[in-house]
Image 1 (cartoon, rainbow, N blue to C red):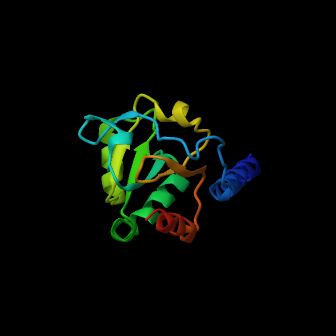
Image 2 (image 1 turned 90 degrees about the vertical axis):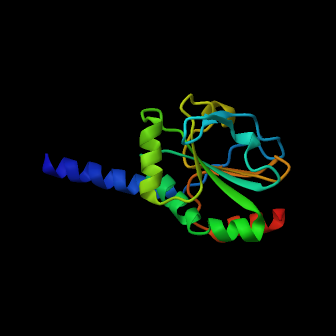
Length: 170
């Protein structure tokens, strides 16, 4: 029994590290206008992601509290967001796709993580069908005109690639 538990734990750990390095490209979004998706801000007000930060490049990460690669990605991006705002006129927006959480628990989680970017809550599950999200984190980069220029599922640790993309959109 003890041996079985150890084997299962090792498989789960290996799966986590493998999935956090695996990037999935979804087809068909690049070059399209970012859709209108209504979510809640941390005060409970309905907001349309599309209308946020007009004229800025948007880095939009769809994430969940239970997802270790999501937390790693957003924490890493959080450490660079002030510089990205200044250098690339870019805004980071985190959209929680947690289905079994409340707005208060998402707000508490984001505050405890020390994140300094806009956090939203997709309580009605509008984003997943809009983008056919199969895995998270799911990152979408939207240019200042609202056009999707890049996207992928999975935590891509190479922030240099993201910075080059942001610089190209400046």
